Length: 373
Image (tube, rainbow, N blue to C red; front, side):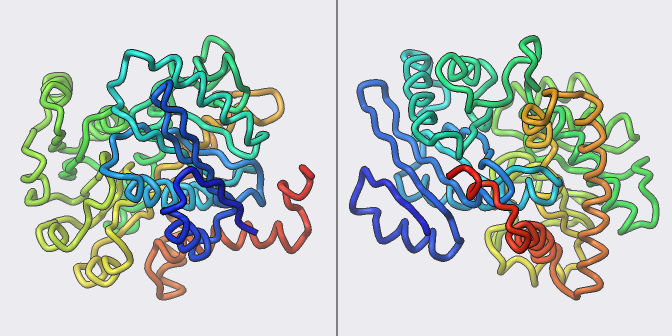
């Protein structure tokens, strides 16, 4: 049964529409204006384990946009952890705030840490867009339900390198599927976004011999990547018109939409961004163009694998994390193979595979959340 805690009663119908359609267990709203905290925590499923998902900090246009984002992202986290073979559920939180906030930032995250404690371990947060390991360390002063903490203290640290490695491994699987070889030498790849993950991905791709074109809204980030790796750079709009073997969206979501799909000149879409497709109306358009699509929540799970490793017996392990992240190659290969067998779009198949693991746990009565009562 879904349980929703409201601060704004006007959102009630919209929230229940969302949770009934997508099967969320709980959505919580936290409002503490004295420290500038306005947060939504969404827990999608805790069958396999506590819901783990990042804390996103973004100046949303309004609460409705924030709610839609956190609902979609938390559901994706359930599938991401399930496909990665982790004993974790899916959750996410959003802080409606300028990510560049400095004054009062510490006080806000301390208060949010107290909010996490109210959820009794059913949701574990981590770094995400707009937040950092420093923010996680602040929350750890108050709560144990903040993951991805500093490496020097036994945590997994920045998840970005692991996300990038997983995307790279997924790209190799898709390349082998599309071209019969995973050799990237001479392949043209467009990387949309030069943030933490995008930079690490570019490094992997350059070392593999690919020819890279990048873009980002941050000109300084573009200049840094271009000078370090000698890649080409174009504007954020021009990136869709570049002829490439692979388009790797690594920034905001929904960049594959009716306005861009006709402009893309690629054989493969494989990147780190969440919610890359506007919606399922893109399935037919992608298939019509013969593009191989790697489901975002399958290919970008390296970060959650690394953070999730903090909760295995013995704590974080580099070798365990490396092996799990490298296995994303096998996950993408399986999804693309099953998509052909089942004659379904890869994202549909990925969701089916993830749900099958969750349902198996339910059928066996091995439900984490039930054991917490």
